[in-house]
Length: 317
Image 1 (cartoon, rainbow, N blue to C red):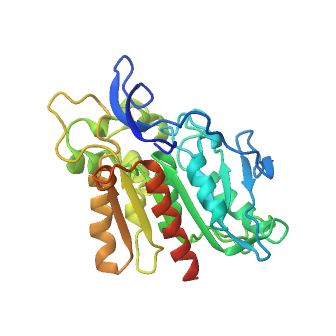
Image 2 (cartoon, one colour):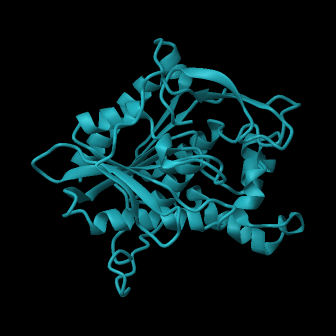
């Protein structure tokens, strides 16, 4: 969901049930656009082989704010190289450094591993903030799909810092200045998804693997506890950071013959979160592809607005 280019319809199987082709809208990287070489590449931030990050440093005489990109892929695939060149370019031009991280996938470790790995990466970056010329007070997260959900989970969750830890990274804060995400699931609770989205979105094949659950465990008290703990919307409280949400899936109800998983990036996820944030006076900017298509604009315009959002939130810190 987070690659650069105008939104094009492409056939992909990554989010569909086995044997089912699911037509979704996914941005395609513009021809000839590639990520520049990072200043730091494949830095190990944790013990697992996928605990790696890349860092692009913005040019500045002062410590720079930081945006951390967390890739999508249904918690089963994806890579830090999925960072959109357009977003990276705009961040660096605005004086914002960018890190991109990998994390353990569901086949390596189920929830909460992806969330905790991403938290660890943010702590590691804060630990090295002075060395890498970063401002540890101004850190934001971004990503698409699974990476969007992780970003929201971190942003709304209580600080995971452990001040008593012997590990200096673990003593660092995991709190964020803001989150700007694409195609976010604001809940990973199949019961919530069934009621909110309808159809068979709640039967997304990535969810059982994400939780490490067998078919006969999906409707047990153990599973229900995991569903609630994994859902970002359940952690919302007064004082949480601002959010920018972008969705490209069509609005409205799903077709009667929608396959399992279709609707997993539905804009109703964003609407449900906004309904919870607005009464708490937490800024929630909700955008849809139609907002940009009417002007003939694509993902570059989305990235432009995201970077403006980052700058405004960083300025408030």
